[in-house]
Image 1: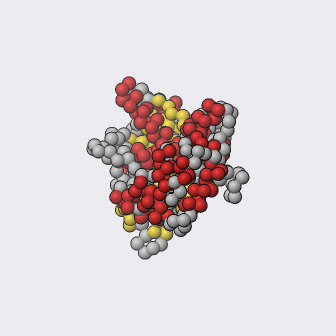
Image 2: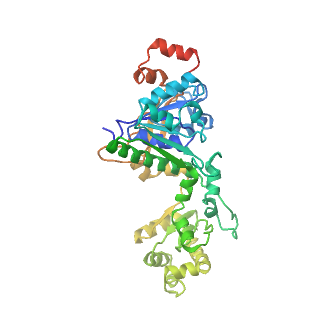
Image 3: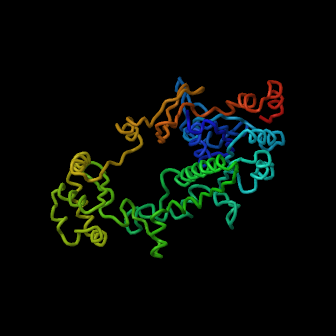
Length: 406
């Protein structure tokens, strides 16, 4: 049994934030029907290379980007701009519990596929819209993209090396963090709305915005500003409130040291053969180390350079100082803990033979999240869904194909 095995999701979204939400729901057992444009489908299908390769090593049409956010779904192609296509979507919505969409504000109203229109055919529907700036406010009709929102929402102002150091300046995160977090918040909102529906019979509308999410996920950085009135600055790989909590260059690579209290700091410098740095009155407590970081950190950097990375990590782990390497992605998937947790999963695929994907991190004892179905080919399940969900026969499906509706 899966937690959401009784739930059907109609996914009208594309690219990342919406599909990420839908993939979470699919991992938890929901029947996710992904609606795509005939002929081209989700934009990310073409966002390559790299592409999944077939048994002969040739590229398939399945871009790795698309594969990352669409496992466990069924793909149905529908021309949403046609009246017959819109009618099909309304029929599918009548059989759905959740609709996800990320069209521009007001776009789906022209097609009769907005919340109010679909609520008329399915009163207890949970309808989630994901946009850059939300359904109201002066920016509502602007297009929103992760990179822009990372900048507008403050993340890039606190990401990157300090301006006064080499390489200083704002940086975006290496993954589309705002999109992913919006997808995660949308997942939580959908689950909460389904719980409310199950208790009351009432559906509802969810208005998710990338900018709202980015502001919310500033977390302690946002709280620091609201408390002090001072805009936080970039600290690179250091921490504004804790020292030492940063990267250090060792003799043969880099390591992270996260000394969160005075005891861990003392063990760090004692292990490095510099116990006097623990008793120096300038460095005895974390507030003092923060105050004197420009003096202390060069001394710690000099100490770190005297040993190799693996030697440091073994030594610090033995005395209980939080530390670790900076792995590239290849090293991540070779890591024994990542392998023990089964975070890579191989699934059969109709074009590639098999694809290796990242497994859901949600591990649950009674209703485990599963990754059993590879991301679908474009339109792979069109006939199946029209037949099994809507009850259409072969002639009706053939007629729809003949008119280019599906």
